[in-house]
Length: 283
Image 1 (cartoon, rainbow, N blue to C red):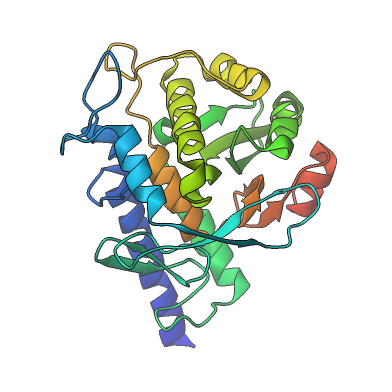
Image 2: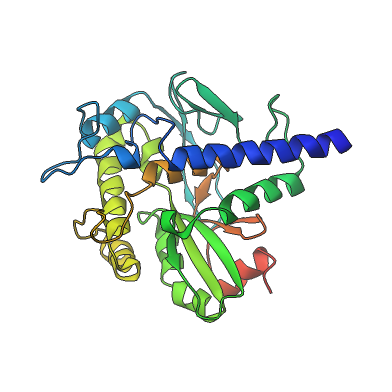
């Protein structure tokens, strides 16, 4: 038992190292350029290898094979299962997330693909999420904060929009809401490549805004955000959409919205603030 605990602690530290490597742009992901690798352009973002975001998204998506959709809990949007090539990111069918030649077990598995006890998975998830700096998440802070929830979300998801309409109610309950942006259309295959680009672009514009409450309100209500560039002048770091996307698969998010408590407990779907907090064990 002692050695098992040592192993879990080591995995937690490794997972954190991976996340900060991702956030610092040290690991490549085809399809979404590294956030610190985007050059300013009046037309379309261009990454260091000369390919536009549109080209990279199409390259990423053309290699995904769409499969049948799975059953999903009430109050969630279902996500298609896809099969990637070996040099791409491994999605739901695998216990590993693979980025290029690098692979890491998802939080729920050890290196032999054996499931880990749920309490350890929750601790690992909580440790990772709670260490994320505010600068890389979309934050709706409660004035009298007593707890934090993390929402894996996509503005094209109806139940995500319903939850977004209740952010103020969460705040009134003393709950700070932090969004982790999960562009689901990245998993839907080649025929959705244009939609995937649109979603990534809108998420990027909303994130780059200096007023997240307004930009994300517009995104979730109107379905689009005003074109905005992240820059040092407006105090915004480059949008970490690719890092959010990888983190979603590391935690093995299967549906949206996915809500995670500060203790790592996961709940899917949304019907009301009370039911969500109750399902997460937040009194």
